[in-house]
Image (cartoon, rainbow, N blue to C red; front, side, top):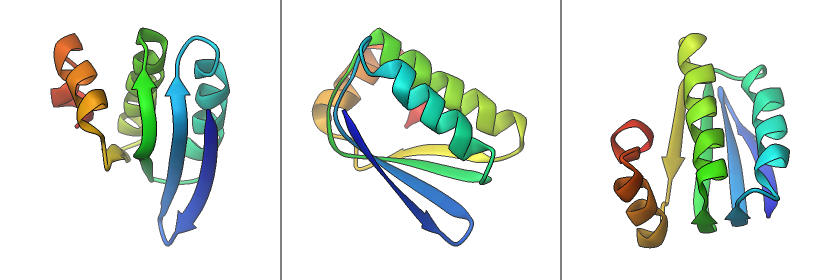
Length: 97
């Protein structure tokens, strides 16, 4: 997994490339925690995201919760049909999409 961070006005966009799974979830969680403290709008650009495991979904849900608790927003953008299918099957598409 590779991430690229871009700051735009009051938002931070994190572009994720590759897979969010058990080997990469902790890295992304740490990065999101750091960035969440710096913004009220956190966006995950999923253009190059290939796969999300249950560990990855936990990271996304934790980011959503963190941002909600500080009255901010967390959103996913440019989500592929494969990742959308995973979120729909797990029942988290309504929360994260």
